[in-house]
Image: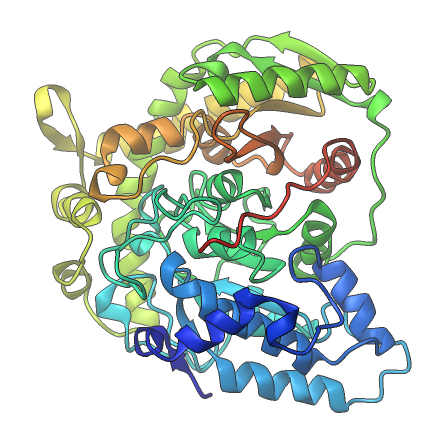
Length: 508
């Protein structure tokens, strides 16, 4: 399958970028507007023959090449393969019957295997690894007619929240950049997906989430994301961190597109919006810690708007949530990262974990693997490290079941559909090596991590641009295990309430 590696595009994209950003006067008018087009709309339009998939895919590729270098959004663009697949769709006689994603372009995070395309997981040692078949999740998307345009950049090995990857860049600076302000982080670890969605390059993407990695980038870039209940999506063919915590997750322009992606991957019929007057949500005080002014004001406005729409919003307690989560989070992720990666490398790339770690480019990720993952250690008191096995065993046998019980009891006792909170407590911060600090990591996963460890689903939706910053702010709904479709139905109703954020300025 033909590939176009972005490091060679820096010169060739100048003309394409200038023509795209110049608008309709510089090119033939497209029969769609990428700033507003959703995947649901595109699938219906293409099936009805309103325009050709090749026209849409070509426009998406042009925008990817125009914006991609500064955003560092893609590691690989498959121009030839995407156009070939689009032409194949166009040549079919559809007669109004098409695949659910027929002819629609999609981006895939570069730790999810796609046949014939490099699957780097954002790290140098895997830059030449080209899998022979699709991961099950990617196969479902292709089977539904989606056109994979390329593989997106990410926080190296998915171990971070900033997307500041020192291994891959297409512009002058490192780090996947925020669609609304390229001096700031895109979030991680599904960073390129968030940037590409926010910049309206694509309307749908699929990433992975261990502690917030689809939700954080969408919160910072103004898109929607679902972390499904653990086990809902197949995990084969995906470079891992933790089999207990990892899951693939859809990311999209809006909740309707999330619903479409979830139906393709997990099955189920079409969903309609929930009746908001029958929805009950809880607010836990601990999730409102460390908020900046824009986020605090936005959440207060969201709560008021929900209550005005008839949603029952209750203040609820989850005693010792942070303490209990701390006994699960690092012990599970750090300890399982060794064995799970060894098994993945043995099955696919055929290299050792030592060789993988030796080539890691990002200092934060290198330090994590050298100091903790390889020796199976955990941070201890006074900057020490301790044996990780006892803490891991306790987490799996005792602490994680306690955390799951806390969630179950909270939902049941208060008859809640979900717990709501600001997805991240802060706006996107400056993109530089310091953005990957442990302090920032812990801050940005403050609200997304506990539900991840409990294995419950979480839905992120964009709700506002900051009053002073004009940067996206997200709201998350964590629901009971298995309530994915109920969360999506609530999200469909809330999307009508909050609307879609305006696209970012095209100054980039």
